[in-house]
Structure formats: C-alpha cells, structure tokens
Image 1 (tube, rainbow, N blue to C red):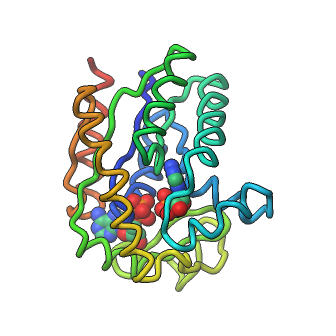
Image 2: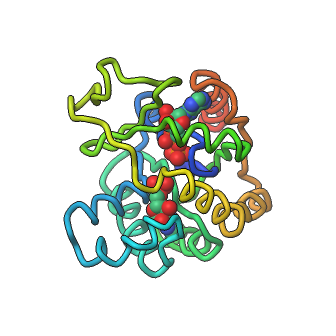
Image 3: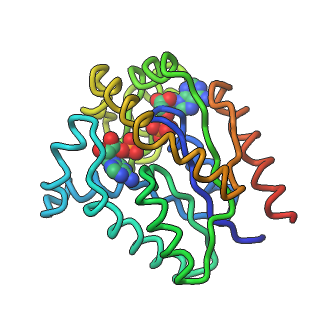
Length: 223
Ligand code: ADP
Ligand code: AMP
C-alpha cells in the first residue's frame, strides 16, 4: 500500500487522537502526537519536561524552540526507519512550526500529502473535553458517553485506571480554544494555499468522521 504522510489539524477535542488510533490500524502510519511526547517528557522528569509544565497546565502553547526540534527529530527517525508514513497530531501548531516542518521534510526528500482539518464548533468542544478520560500509560482516549471503556474507568488495553487530564478542566479548555483560534487556525489558510487542505466535519459521530477520512486517504493513495 502506498505510503502517505498526514497532518491531523483541528482544535482540542476535535477527535485527532481518537481518529489517529483508527487510522494506524488501517494504513501504514506511525501516530506522532506532540502532546503525548511532551507528557512523556514530564512523566520521565526530564529537563524539557520541567520546562514545558507551566505552559501545558495553563493551556498555552509551549514555545516553538522547545517543541520543534524534539518532534522533527522524531519524524526524521520514523521516516528513515521503515516503510510507514507519519500521522502528525498536534504538530505543527504555529506558522513557524509549519515552515520548519516543510524545510525538514524537503531535506529528507519527503512531503506532507494531506492535512485533514477536523472542524468543530467551540460549544461542542467544551462538552467533549468534560467527558474525556485518558489512559496515563498508553495515552488512549475515551469519552464517558460517546466512547466509554468496556470496564468502568479502566483502559481496555492496559487495565490501568483512566484519568482526567489537568488541562481538560473547563477554564483551561476555554484558554486552549482561544489559543487555537489565535495561533493555530491560520494553518488552515497556510495549507489551503499549498493545496493539500482537506476539510472534515468533526461534529459527526466517531465512525462517520473515520469514514470521511478513509475516503480522503484512499483517494490520495489511488492517485
Ligand atoms: P483531540 O485529540 O483532537 O484533542 P480526542 O480524540 O481526545 O481529541 O477527543 C476528545 C474527546 O471527544 C474524547 O473524549 C473522545 O472520546 C471524544 N470524541 C472524539 N471524537 C468524537 C465524536 N466524533 N463524537 C463524540 N465524541 C468524540
Ligand atoms: P494536546 O495533547 O495536543 O492537546 O497538547 C497538550 C498541550 O501540549 C498543549 O496545550 C500545549 O501546551 C502543548 N503542545 C502540544 N503540541 C504542541 C505544539 N506543537 N506546539 C506548542 N505546544 C504544544
């Protein structure tokens, strides 16, 4: 099957992590979530982890100079390691990150094939985040109503108790939505101009969003 490199764009709660899990089961893709990478640094107690803590907990973006290098070096490593493409989730989030990503991909003779833009109204975002629960071990996400675990509050894969992320508290979610609109939403125009933006209505149920994304990817692979 043809290899593709994709970006999942969209506000917090749009369903990037949820869809990523399904996409890696269907296509040769490695899911790279910058948020998961930063949370792993924090859990490991690294210097980087300590530096990013206050930004993350208050819903702000971590400065480009702390994020870009870590994520891009991981992308390069994954792309040189095998036949899978990358599925970027949460990166890039600023125009500077998008430019640095484009340069890095060019250097290694790779390109982003499509940017899947999951569009969702801010009212729905707040509802989704209130019900989101995450596995502290593997990062898998659930929703109390829309996507509950099989056993009450336990991860289906790890059997570890699920947690609510500290930055999923309502006031932090509102800050994150504002940050998305101020700093990240411009990437829609950025990638529309490049000609690779594919808009998806993220308010549909989880299966319908997946179907919409599968169609987009299948079309790219066929061409
Ligand atoms: P993101 O990675 O974009 O921040 P998530 O994938 O973590 O978003 O989804 C946010 C929350 O909304 C999770 O609790 C998830 O289970 C739930 N969710 C995701 N997609 C949908 C959907 N299409 N309909 C209802 N709930 C959803
Ligand atoms: P996420 O898991 O994608 O919701 O990200 C959680 C938090 O990590 C964000 O609110 C930011 O503080 C930080 N973060 C993740 N990715 C980036 C990025 N590409 N640029 C800046 N900050 C990021």
